[in-house]
Picture (cartoon, rainbow, N blue to C red):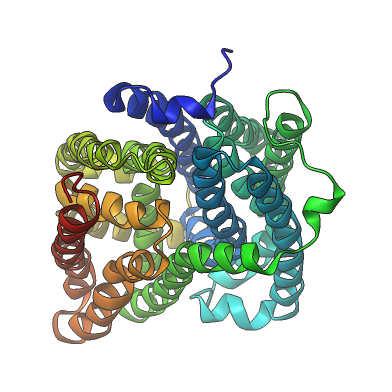
Length: 461
């Protein structure tokens, strides 16, 4: 694998550079998304549709803890990209050391709290009725591996900040492939049920951590830290916190969204309605992998060139990223509008002699999920502007606008909508909240991004 220098972020043509950064990120996200998707298909076919709902209940808690690592990673990587761009390698090293120490400190503490409040958290996130026993099994086992996942997510963003997207891609592929193989072994061969699904996921986190550790200890990484770099620096922690808070806030709002959605839908249709949302949630994670890949590829390019005061390249990277991401988002939209029934059917078991309860749940899901999927993804072609716009402010270290734009869709629009519309329109109100929030958030983001380009990135000023 050819060695890539961070300096290339400031010299190569933007279109070529974005493809070089985004394609490996997209492949990595694709494999991770396929992991989530196929994992759910395995669980649905080999354990049952209620098991999918149980995993959906657990995800917001475990993902929030893991998101601490992602938040620290993205916040610190913005500093690292700009420090490398300006030639300040010592600041980059100090930032990386602080990232590792902070990730360990916070995630281990959160795991302890998460296990202590287990019987409160699972029902609060919609794990009620027949969902609770399966959710508790999965939650307990997966939480043990979440600190390793957090370290992986933190390390992955740093690898990209170094300008080495292929290594970051491999780091995302390894745990996904491992998890799917172990799913087959633990669930299908050993018949461990939910225990098998949980241990396969946790083992995948450990495989990822092993590869990330190998990367930074090998000569592939430019960031060779010593013990002194782990000592906390308040200015660096403050900057990591202000920028990482954007990502953490987004995940916190996502967790609140899961809490509200699972409870609202449980009240509207019981466990089967939660299973409908679980399938749509998997598609939300999977379908936009190329858009997220473009966004991930865009971040180090924008951050490095902003740090090097190459504002014309920053502006060009914004326009190119929006163009590429919009194209792939439109393709996703077409696929989901045409094939929602076939997609839904993948998650449901077609075994003979299914219990009556499972048959009834499957029939309910097939009746409700396809139309719901069409509504949820109705505004897909325009989300690129929303994602790239918020990512720009984060990449260049502008924490407040990044935070506000990140929270716009879910915090300012979506959550109020799902609290209001279902009481008026019932189930229809839940699904309509998605495209309405997307349209409103895109309008707001577009306005602020346009103002930023005119005032800050115009080289004539």
